[in-house]
Image 1 (cartoon, rainbow, N blue to C red):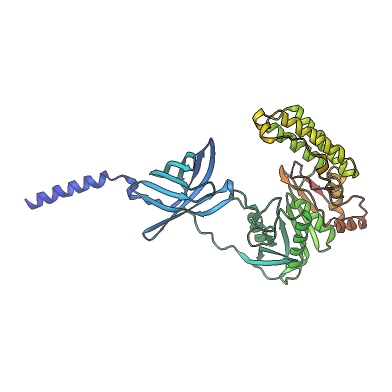
Image 2 (cartoon, rainbow, N blue to C red; image 1 turned 180 degrees about the vertical axis):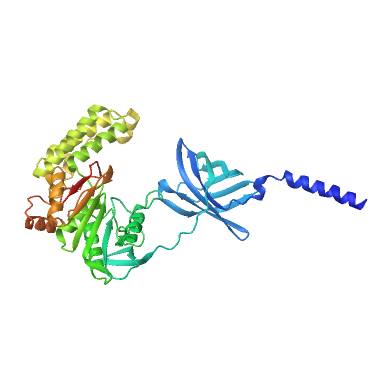
Length: 439
């Protein structure tokens, strides 16, 4: 009798256990990759859940916004339901969802914005084995600026050739990381395994470096690169006769500048450097942006004419009154096309002549001059007395130097070049160029 009752109880318990959903027995700990869908846009996210005893913690990466490892709060995962919150500027972002197998879906709310999210369980991260070379965290002084970086040195004894990696435009860390991809880290790893020491530093104001990128010029970045070369020269494990530069994007402008002023640079490598004049690049950029914004063709032509007038004024140092008048006329015509309510809110848009700005533009070689052309670029690279390999692709860049220009001009004259080294920094540009080898 008792045995029969025990058997029946076992059957009931087995039935109850089989009725429990699978998600109640599965932890959400690990990586979950997917996206938030809100206001018609998809925003990629990576959420990592971690069990710490009886408490669960989580962090989120949002690559498109440059956010990594942001801690989440009020993280809960029970009975197949999840809840976590992200404190953010526009307001608290709240995620509520359910877990079915390896898929987590739910709602996303942040202030008035509402959307959905879906993430899938990703593969567990495997710890990286230690590299077969030495890694050293370094700091380099350049005047009042401190540059923080990583030096990788081959494990073999002796002095090694070395290369300094120079980042592209905009604030970049030492790995030149974009959306979780670290090209400079991969380049450093490959070259160091091949027997070449590599130094890569955070840009000014990024990571462990001081200063500010927006308040600096390309000339300042050239000084930073030169300071890194001098640092390598002082190390006994570096071959002083074989120190080079690898510049990507705007770094493709910085590297020749440093090579033209320093005999310590044995070679340069230029990746995706600009190969068009600044004037052509900026005009093409303006046209493409206008087309993307569906601006009327007549206005696009008027904008291009105004830009050409500005370039001419930069070259000659005269004609700024005409530029100002043309700019005012163009602005007024754009305002006239606005709805009446917007025009009333703006008030009288006509400028007061007495208070018009008389700001003078810096005297420098214009962006349309031959100093930024492909031909002159090759000539300059040759006269830097450094072997150079230049590979190019469509990227964004900013203008070359201003402060270091005088020293580079002196170097160019000694080399027999008639071109100047600096041109006006009017805007960020987009450049397209073809692979070219310069001896």
